[in-house]
Length: 166
Length: 412
Image: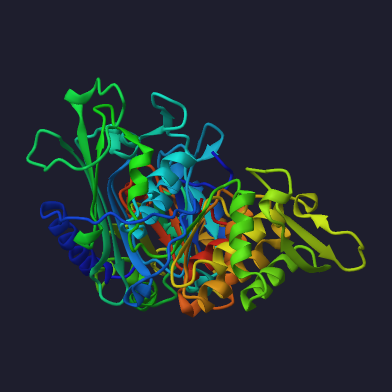
């Protein structure tokens, strides 16, 4: 497979998410590396503004060989507002998106074929909002506050496994 | 992808449906034919000048059913080998060649899908190759919708009927002298939108068509120029160049070639019978370079020049029509591709041409992205990826092309 073809891809805001999510997923029983490849390619985008640039998610959804695309956003103390913002950005891509973010995370099929999901990290699960995008989850781990098998991380892990069929 | 196309799809499908179940038939007149071998057809109907916004294909080669939507002025088809990119170009050529059955010879001839009949001067075209699964019982339907009307603008239906059906016998010459396969003889029907453009001819039970029979028709098809992967033949180039030499259009040709070699002062075709006959590849054109006393054969300055000349000539001759280019990047260094696209887009806009090109090259896509970026809002550039197993193309508009190139996403 060419190096830039990723059947399962997760867009995150910051680089720290890229380190923490594999840790979290592996701790919940999913082998992260198979045949020398990560089961999901995590692509840190440097913040919400980069993710929400025109055409970015639309282009990702059309990438060659894509089977499932996930987007993990920080709630930034207002999850409904975050959902509204990302929904505005991707509305044209789907026949219908819910007005409110589903509690179990968004998981839909894009008309071009791939599965598409959105997860908004609630502030109360991780740490309070920080200036550096993606920092809260990382800090939670660093400070030992975050238990990867805690019941509070289960909905995210469940969403992740469903979306990427792991 | 917007919510709009679903409505469009219904409209297109319903009209195609009408064509499938109510195939127009009608008498046709014999006309004198003068075919030029480059699939160049003059435009007759000004109303058809608008661009195709979508194209539907049924039963053609590997496509049971396929759809391209949201088309722009310049459309780049990508996808793996044998995914059907060239087939799509052929379908568009067929669609636009209304009343010009000789298009079948162009399509099958380019792929070498013919065989000698009883003697070597009469190639028999292997028509069954055009049908999905080589099944002569199938039906080929190609429809094109315009952005303006949302209606099927053009369509072509091809199917085979048994001779035993109630078709009046034509005044066609015998297909093959021995007529040994007479029992299995079939008729090939090609029906374009206008019933007057319908074409019918005998084929053998094996789906072979005597190419001479195609020369009896001369319809009103619209302008369509097809440039093959190896480029035009030198004969075509000399003829097309001859058509525009000393006109304003010639200046655009010279300008396009200066993208590759700024020292070009002028170029000129040399009549075919004065030089060695070169059927394939560069030939028949000489360049004058600044500060160089002798004229220089175009073949001496590389394949890129030949591709660029073919593109420029194709554009100059496709006014109000369609330009189809197989592997548009052939022979071009990545550093000139952006300029190549700039020439293509500028001439396509100026002359109301819709362009469909194929590529395998990443440079080709990224250079197109640079063009798309210069005018993101216009939406006039698309990439359409043909994936095996999908019945519609994956479409990238200007914004997605730019975003994909910025993020080094794989789109091919």
